[in-house]
Image (cartoon, rainbow, N blue to C red; front, side):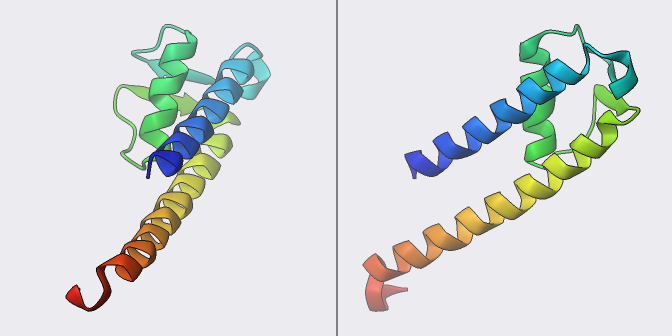
Length: 98
């Protein structure tokens, strides 16, 4: 379980690093709203997108929106896959008690 959480956190930070890199080039778009341009703001935005929580106080614009869509799809698939995998693993240990 901790491995799955660690893997998802790592994936979020990889996307955060990509956002941080992309916002330094105005041709790639920007993040607007309650955003200061820090890596931590990028990580916060990445966590909200990866978990498909949705946009609230930070919004993407320009080509950066495509990375946002890819991250949302990636997060949805990977979180769902992880939940399914953990369910199947726990079912082995629960046996007939399910």
